[in-house]
Amino acid sequence: MTPGDGAGPVPTRVSTGIGAGGPVRPVSCTWYVETMAGGSFFALGDEVAMAIPEGYSVLRTCTDDGDGHVVSSDRIPWPGHGGAPLAAPPVTATELATRAEADLVLPVPALRTWPAAGRALVGLETWFHLDTWESLEQTADAGGVAATVRAVPVRAVWHLHEATLTCAGPGSVYDGSSEQTDCGYTFTTYSGEQPDHTFPMAVDAVYHLTWTATTGETGDLGEVVRTTPFALRVWEMQAVIN
Image (cartoon, rainbow, N blue to C red; front, side, top):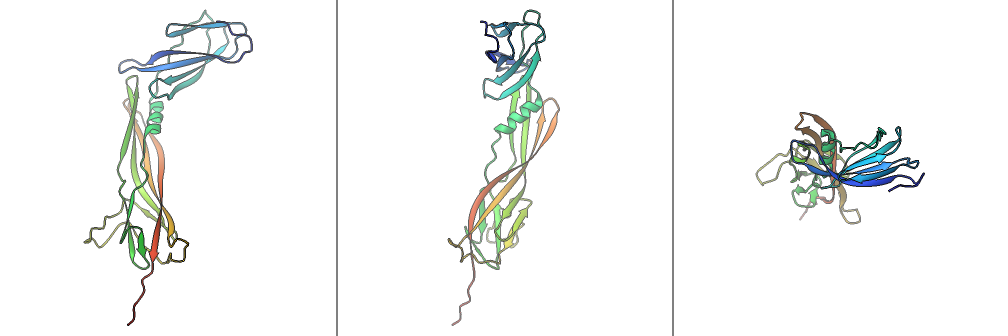
């Protein structure tokens, strides 16, 4: 077909494959001719040939047919020798790591408190604990290359209305016999004057993300935070005099 001059980008979409030497992931590439000036382009099997003058360029965008992720998007000068086919580019380890990070699901924190669920006492240490405290991994692969993202929980940050408590681990579980916790706080403020008699609070689970690839490449993706809001009623002990 022959697009009109100045008609804007004209796409064509064909399916090809990524890489060799491993499981081949199908990839669809779309070529956009930025300026046609009377030229034409056409699809031939799983290749694209264009009859346009030398010096013109095309924009090629390739996506993974399986999950829809964009594999690459780049501008390519056209050689102008009658239309050499454009092959799908190989996927890099960095691109696979980005895809794995996007697919990684980190849970929101599941929490418990003692001495009683949802309640605390002024002057008595409250224990805090996260049940969701484990390392998680997600892998993406294409063209015989795989990249794995690993998320490791590094700290829990408890926003306790009157203070912020940072714990290096999930916190001890109260079993009736333990006397100490590595994640506790003693409240000094009574919540009974609040409209619902509770203080709004929240806990952040902080994960550190890194990645490794079968190519030997590695990378650091920084920290990701997951948050759970909760409410806690802080009681005040009253002395009874007979």
